[in-house]
Image 1 (cartoon, rainbow, N blue to C red):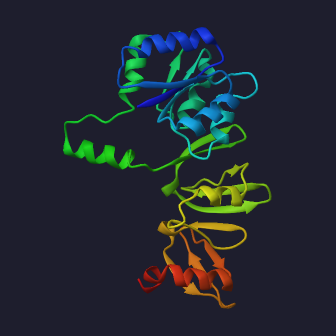
Image 2 (cartoon, rainbow, N blue to C red):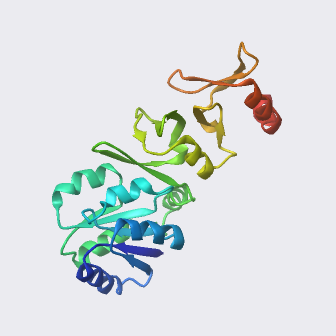
Image 3 (cartoon, rainbow, N blue to C red):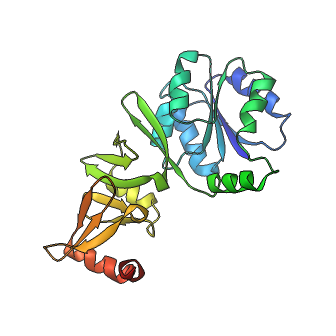
Length: 243
């Protein structure tokens, strides 16, 4: 597992590197002292795991995650336990309070990989690690890690995008166009200037009055697809419409 250490304190990075030497399954791909440097290295190195400090000059660990297109697995490392609740609210793998001990590090790493024995366990692990990307969303003081399959709809609101999943509708500072470039086109379809729909959440598709299509989602949501986009959609998704 390739990992990146992100911490503004050189001694903290060195100590974590020393502790990780006892875990040969973790390959340290690089280190970063700032959120900006970490963002560049994550894009370049594509680590599966990051050890992330929260309070750093020039941008917090949460700011870094919010700027990523897709977030890797995260283990937070910090000296401030007041962040613990927020860290777990965003579904981090674990939260290590400095100074990090060998036992706590081993416990945190234990959560990064499935354990071989049972068939059921292997199936669950496969579902979790099957490459389903996660999106980190920060809206005010609230944060979420959301797997893309959970998201049923992206809705443009100026320079922001509202993200619909479960019973949540947070705003993220990312345009719909920026998101569209990173989403899998076979799953996420641009229904209109304001909407991108996850086809896995579409319950039915009907003709609309203006010659387009109405996509019926859960929560009684109906997204209207324009006539032009509907024509393109019909050509590229014939099997879905026939079903």
